[in-house]
Amino acid sequence: MLGPFTVGQGFPWATLTANVLGSLGLGLVFVLGEDRSWFGADLRLLLGTGVMGGFTTYSAFNLESIGLMQSGAWGRAALYMGGTVIVCLAAGAIGLILGRVVRG
Image (cartoon, rainbow, N blue to C red):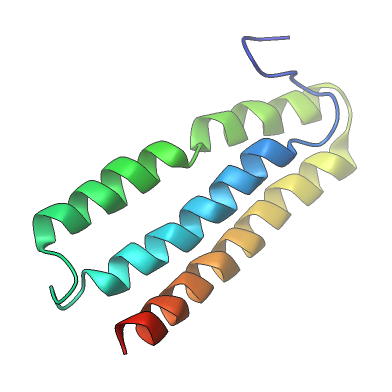
């Protein structure tokens, strides 16, 4: 155990969820601030880099991936790493689409 993370045990659902929601949110922020009709470039940077960047957790993803591999849970590690990339890309794309729908 290292800090709040149980390294190498179970599936890291909390980190995956945070990264998926952050990817979705970043897509929304990007589109809604794109033409400055919803908010300006400064707020877009703050929300995108600051809030969504702080919300997502690459360092936890890294630590948990290594922990799964070190504990011999190679299948879970592969599922977690591959799933994170695929699902987060899909969530980001959905965020872009939702942003365009909301923006009109």
